[in-house]
Amino acid sequence: MKDIKKRIAVSKLWNNIFLITGLLSTLVGLVLLFTLFVDLFIDGVPRLSYKFFASFPSRFPEQAGILSAWVGTSLVMLVTAAAAIPLGVAAGIYLEEYGRKNWVTSIIEINITNLAGVPSIIYGLLALGLFVYLFKFGESILTGGLALALLILPMIIMATREAIRAIPNSIREASYALGATKWQTVKNHIIPYSMGGILTGIIIGLSRAIGETAPIITVGALTFIAFLPVSPFTSEFPFISFKWLFDPFTVMPIQMFNWVSRPQAGFQVNAAAAGIVLLIMTLIMNAVAIYIRYKFRKKIKW
Amino acid sequence: MFKKVVWGLITLMVSAAVTAGSVMSAERKLVGIDGSSTVYPITEAVAEEFQKATKGAIKVTVGISGTGGGFKKFCRGETDISDASRPILAKEIEICKQNGIEYIELPVAYDGLAVIVNPKNTWVTSLTTADLKKMWEPAAQGKIKKWNQIRPEWPNSPLNLFGPGADSGTFDYFTEAIMGKSKSSRGDFTASEDDNVLVQGIAGDKNALGYFGLAYYEENKGKLKVVPILNPANKAIIPSLQTVKDGTYSPLSRPLFIYVSKKSVSKPEVKEFVDYYLKNVEKLSKQVKYVPLPANAYMLAKERFAKMKTGSMFGGEEKVGLKIEDLLKMEEKKK
Image (cartoon, rainbow over all chains, first blue to last red; front, top):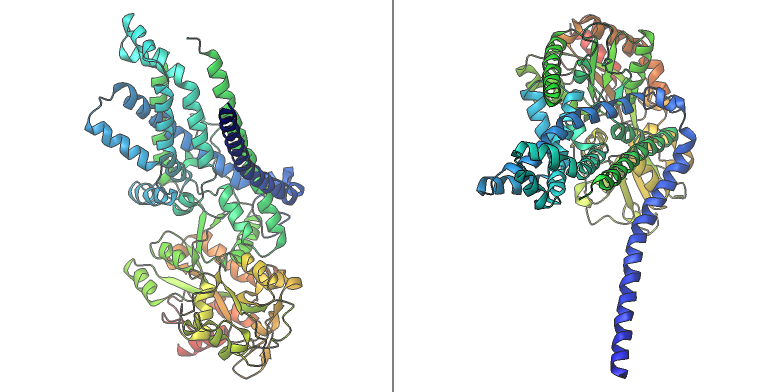
């Protein structure tokens, strides 16, 4: 009896030790992030104003702003989303629902998993050779967006596949039993049920892309740009213009990097303020991802 | 519903392709500049003022690929102007030649390299280039670790060195000026491409010594101490606007350049920009804490541009302690 009690006590002790270790590990991450956050806020918040968002870069720190940077980041993200989402989701659905399990699909699968681990600068070099020199897109928003799309494509494919795999086979069988074709099954059941997971994957991919600097520098984003790309809306037919795709651009991380390396202390403050904006952009995207997942999960009633 | 979406997508793609095609052929008034991060603040200031002056009719973009990276793009004909913190090198001249790119070399300002110690450092009152060589030469690696190894009267405390990384033009110039050979340096020092990291490092270490652009010293005067350097005439000179400008702070001051593609000058917007650059750089370079060239050097540079004089004054070699006026004058005489 005594023996058993002793053993229980030892087990309980180990349980508590693991609990505390786990808690401490979690706290280290949280505390670090929090410190970074507070530090950025103390440095940067006084600089955040309407003018900061509406001004171009300047040699005077107090006049410099992030207009060309945040517009550039938003447009690049738009191109990235437009390119990576259809391709990634379609590829994911094909691999899960259509592709036969043979050596070709195995090779594709292994490649996709490996691609997710390739350093981002490699994608930049690929984009430089492919989009800038071969397709002659120039050092443009289009090139930057496509480079980042390549970067997050494996993430979106994998997220799509994970989401589809979570759907029980009985759903598919029920659909086929009612005489639905494969496409009808995919369209009416597979896509809607996996939508939450797919969207989450997309947004996590995009929020990684938004902070990437290396591939964007490689494809030739610029540092000083004091004008905006051509407006996508025109007063003449067809009212939508795609000229902006070929405009030069800069993005938030590049603007920050430039400011950090300047001698004047005022630019350090600007960099911190731009960091807050970028952090908030990422946090909003992640929040949207969580909300979408929650909403879609609630809708599914099997 | 689904059909509609597909048709919508197809029309969108077609119209995108059509507009894209027309854009690529359309003319845009754009001046493309890339190159050295050292020259960047000057070019940025000029570009900022120029766009204000032309009310945005002419657009200017400035990138930072480094002097070498800038020349790569320039010699492929991708940029109109290249910022450079050193003269164009022989191999770059060769590549430009192969691609039929002719260029006009224009000096725009001086940059001084400041040798910096911690304000608590009381023993260093001046340094000779021989002292600097002893500290930084490749043979010093792992051997020269204490201040008293440089001069016996200095304390027996560690010598902690800070300098820019090997990709920087500042590193190239310092090694050329001190060791006589570009990129020849010991490797066991704290290196950073970000000069602010060097400023922080030296400000927090009593035994530190480092070097970087004068602008970073000017902005952080309170927490750093600048060391006077003995010039070839054996006078200890503190780097400043005056001493760099009149050439007495030698050999650690260097000219900065822009290279303008001759082909691009035929575009009126590029010509207008360069004219504006040469007219205003004296005032603007001072604002961003660089050292302007003497007034007559700008006169000569303007002349050089007006006459579209191509080629480099330096013949592809790295040189140290140059005075721009002498070079420009020399060239005038040659004709």
